[in-house]
Length: 96
Image (cartoon, rainbow, N blue to C red; front, side):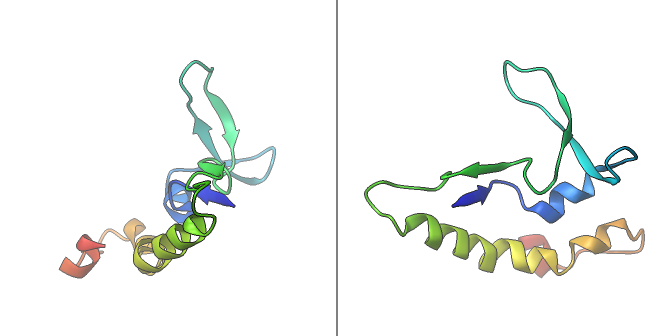
């Protein structure tokens, strides 16, 4: 399973529009490598088997599902509003 270590919608907030690919791109930085300017928000922080455990084959699915339900989905409901200067986080949104 390919796990995202950072929610995609959050990555999109920092992406730039590349006129050559006509899509959103990020600068990707990795230790020991030159910066890469054309990483996609879809795959920039995606790692195959990131939460996998050989002793528990279902662990990765449970973790991904829990992260989606408890963090990503609730945050995705308001993250697009960050661009609105009049947007103010509520206490509930701050906790999420």
